Image (tube, rainbow, N blue to C red):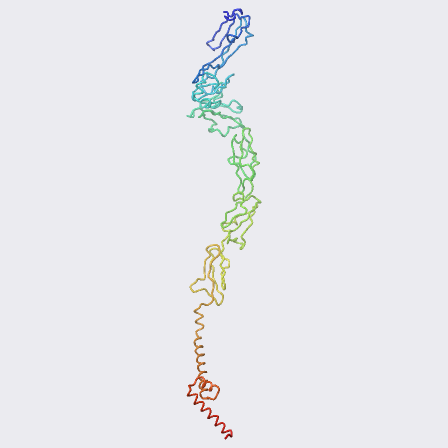
Length: 483
C-alpha cells in the first residue's frame, strides 16, 4: 500500500493479528516508508487505544480510556510488535479480587450496588458507576462483606487450619457457624481478646470484612501494683494481647492522685503502663454525722488520704457530745486513725432555757430528749396549774415558765386586820372628841369651854354662860375684900 497523500515516501505493508486465547495483538511490518510520514492531514500514530462514548444531556463525547503508542523510530522493514493484553478492573467479578487486584495502571474499587468493579476514572462502566452513586459508596481492600481475610504478614507465630492459601487468602463468611478456622499460637503468644475464640481456640467467620485473628506476644505479669492488684490477672501468668485490667486497691486504700487506674497488654508483649507505677495509698473514710459539716470540704468525696486534715463543724445549738460547749473538732487521717468516733451522733442538739429571775432549770444545758425541772427560789412559785417538768424536743432556745412573787389573793388575806385597826382609830377619835366636849361643857370658863361656847353653843347658852361668868367674877371679887 501507498499512502495517498505522501506517495513518494514508499510502500507501507503490514499485518495485524488478534490472538484469541489471550487477547494479545501482534503487528508485523514488512515494508515501511523510507521517509518520515507527516501528521499534517492525519494523526501519525503506531499503537492501539481504547475509547467509549460519554453521554450527557446535550452532547456525546468520545473519551479515550487508555492507549499504547509505540516508538516509531524503532520500527522498520520486517519488524514485529506484540501488545500483551493487560487485566482490567471491569473484568473482575467479585469484591475480594476487585479490591485486592494489583494492576499496573488501575486502582480498582467494588460497588456493591452495581455488583461491578471499576477504576472509577474512565472505563466502560463509568456512566453506570456515577449514576448509581458509587463514587461515594464503594469498598476497598478488607471491606468486602463476603470474606474473612487471612493476615498477609506477621503470621510467623500462628498456624491456621485450614492453612492460608497464598493465591486466595480468604475464607467465605457463613452465618450458620460453618466457616471455622483453628488458630494455634506458639508458646508465649496468644490471640487478642478482641476475638471471640472457642474453647479449642477456633474462630468462626460469621460476617465478612474481618481479618482472621493472629497470634501476638503475651504479656508476663510479674510485679503487682503497690497495695493493690489487677482485677482478673494473676501474678506470674501470661496476659493476652489487647487485654485490659483495672486496678483494685487493698482494704482501706484508694488510688493515689495522679496514678493510672488500668493496665493494657499491647501487641509487643509489654504491659502499659508498668503495673509497678500504679499506686494505692492509705485513706480514711469520713462518716456523715448529722447536724454537722466538714470544712474545708474534702476534695475526694468523703475520703481523706493519709496525712490530710479537715474540721468537723457542728450546726448552731449543737455541740460535741463529749466536749460541751465545743463545736469544732480537727480530723486528721493517720495510719492508725479510726473514724468510728465520728458516729452519726457526734454533734448533739441542746436546748437553751430562756432566763427568768428567781428560777433554776435542771439540767442547766439539757440535750434533746432530756427532762428539764423548774425550781423556784424561796418566796416565789410557779403560777397555779403550771407543771414543773418539761422535755427538750428541738435544739434551740427553749421557752419555759418562770417563778413569780405571791399572788394578789394572798396579799388580801394577809392584810385582813386593817378594817379593825381603822375602826379602833375612829372610835378613839370619837372618844377624844366626846371627852373634850364634856370637859368644855362642865368647865365653861376654861379655854375649851369658852371656845365651845363661842363657836358651838346657841345664843341662849352664850347668855347663860355669860351670866355665870359674871357671877363668878363678882363672887371672886367679894371674897377678895372688895366692897
